Image (cartoon, rainbow, N blue to C red; front, side, top):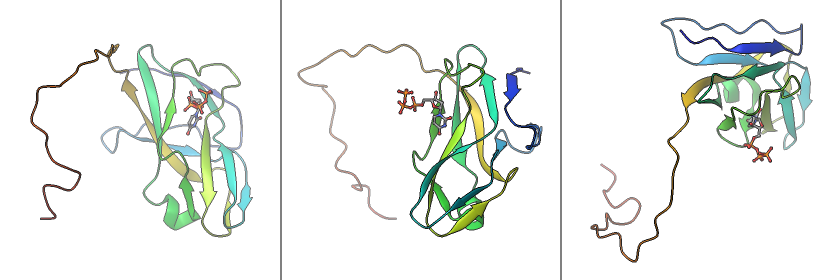
Length: 144
Ligand SMILES: O=c1ccn([C@H]2C[C@H](O)[C@@H](COP(=O)(O)OP(=O)(O)OP(=O)(O)O)O2)c(=O)[nH]1
């Protein structure tokens, strides 16, 4: 079990819940009522700031039902929360683009996150040739 220090920046949202055995991913809630016109963009506050465990980052993605329920897409497709994003005012947000006129209410579950261990440190070693066979272009393995 890993514990995460969390600061709630809103008393209008329910506390985060990790549901053991259901899914690793933890739902996040809108901390504000947001009304968007089709084509409008907004950073929706999620009402939380966290100190992630050392060596971890968090990934935020939409819930599968987010588009069906709210008509918004996440503009960065997957949000990365760095370990250094850990101050009291480092509120997590969901960058939303409305594809239709829509209203997201306070406490609506609009996205989900889980933590991942950082990748190892990387150095880039430049080479004239990689010395491997080419795999072929994208889609070269066909459709079936
Ligand atoms: O969907 C997201 C993406 C990012 N963040 C927060 C956590 C992250 O650590 C910080 C900065 O994100 P990122 O590094 O991806 O943004 P940037 O555009 O590179 O800005 P910066 O100059 O702040 O690094 O914003 C979120 O709350 N939600």
